[in-house]
View 1 (cartoon, rainbow, N blue to C red):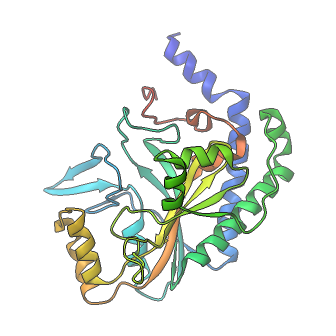
View 2: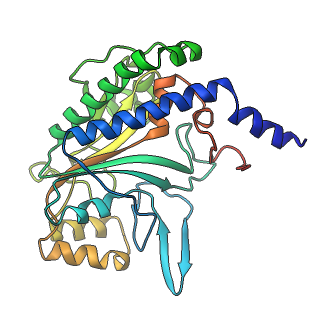
Amino acid sequence: MKQVTKQLMEHTSSKPMLAVLKIQSLVLYEIQTFFRERDFIELPPVITAPLTDPLAHGVHPASIEYEAQYLHLTKSMIFHKQIALLGDLDKIVIISPNVRLEKSSEAKSRHLLEFQQIDFEIKGGKKEDVYTLMEDLLIRITEVCKTKCAHELTFLGRTLPTLKMPFPRLSTDEMKQKYGDDFEAILSKTMTTPFWLESFYREFYDKEDPTTPGCFINYDLIYPEGFEEGLSGGERENDYETIIRKMDERHMDKSAYEIYLDLAKEKLIPQTAGAGFGLQRLLRYLTGIRTMEQVVLFPRSPREPIIF
């Protein structure tokens, strides 16, 4: 038997992996139940599209050419979420496979090339709605895991804390001044509870505070104990002129966004707020496993070859 085959068998059939998969199954059930109880409509994911999330950092292109059309593999459902809320839908959630071909030289320990993201969006929603929703969900998941997966957590040597609302909220500008460019990692290592970081300069679709230029109504949820960022979200821009200005500031090619911009120009895109959080990053925090590859049955990682 080849060594690589042996490694695959050991990884997929190990007792730690079985424990992770049992926790993952429970977490997925709780996520879907939680959103259903709050009248969110679950939509199937979009896998290929003419446009996808431009992201705030560079990755290798993940796209295909199909009969003279150029299609991207989904990096996130951000634009499709906004368009899905044009009609009578008010709250949506999608468990979406995302493909982000991170550059191996720049990838962080939390990055995977392929992962599942829980994407949700609320028509008329505000930052506070997302905070309350996500804090409720994370508290529920940790408590249910402690009860229903106690054996698995004990086997993995993990003791989950008792979380309480509200989670701390910190300004990125203030934290950067205090800790320097690596403020997120430093805070994640020192904090003992999940916390919010607010106001990032990033993709054009996150809303800029109209009363405070340069301040953005967006946020990341950061896991403690060094597990770092687990969720990104924001209130969304829907004003056409503002979107165009922000795309120009980022030197973006608008050709792929023609339909999206047409809808914005006609004032058809509603005001929304939402977020996306990675299933595997959540599992890493819940299980206490430091290596991302060890919480995925068939990992696609920028740090090692993909063997199966």
